[in-house]
Image 1 (spheres, one colour):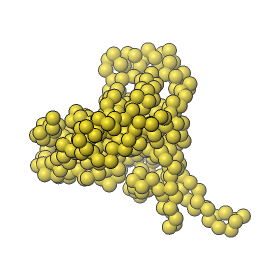
Image 2: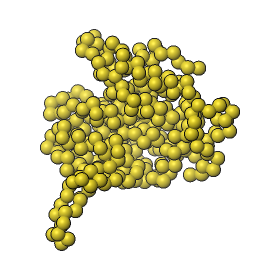
Image 3: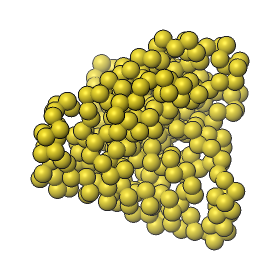
Image 4: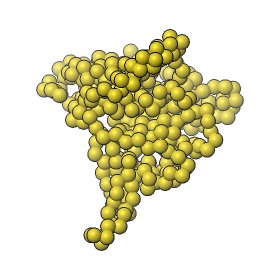
Length: 339
């Protein structure tokens, strides 16, 4: 990807005149993301917000937890995205009997060399789809802590680095809890987004039936071709990091995160990792919407997906029927929006 006119924005608080001189070229990136978005939309009916957030996570180098009832195309969405990137893909079905070594790999004895050699597990890939992540016990979920945060695996005292890009797309069912294990807060915090996938509308469901009857989706999925290479994705991510963010928007992000720690509706607030996630996600959304600068609306848009899994309601608010999204909306209304 050509990036001759791109200059590193090392200071987010630079004067407007300086910013105007360092405008970045986002058109090549937009062309690629539009192709990805169009290809996914041909197979996935509706779910436009989910698709946009998935692309934002891809550009922001973040993991995604996709939650929804069975049958709303969570797995299909992840598989479709993986096919559009020229990178390695692996799928892990989490079950109660899954062991950590089944995910990260294990040391095997090699009789020919008379030593143990490390056999990589399925997590050694670029795009990893974890189906029903809450089906595995705590010891298996804990195996993901290091790899999701540091992009490396340590086994028997030896560290194995993963080749970039590395993104985990995990799914879970919010209504069936028998035989499941609640994800620990430390793991939830490692996901950039938690995306809630709802039911389609009547119009969308009618289109799903029509396309299934014509077998259109199956044919399109079989014929999908990658539209972006690993090198291009890396270039896109570097470009996103250069998106301009004014100092008052940095304060807005910090104020939003800090407000979660003192709100009476919450017994668990968001950590500084949430602030970093808000910043990176808002940059990615700005680029997807054709801008090289972040607006308050970008931050407000990504806030629910960034914060909903990082905060916890008090029992009193839960009994009132409130949700974390309700509290996030209240917090956004309370904080003065910079203009």
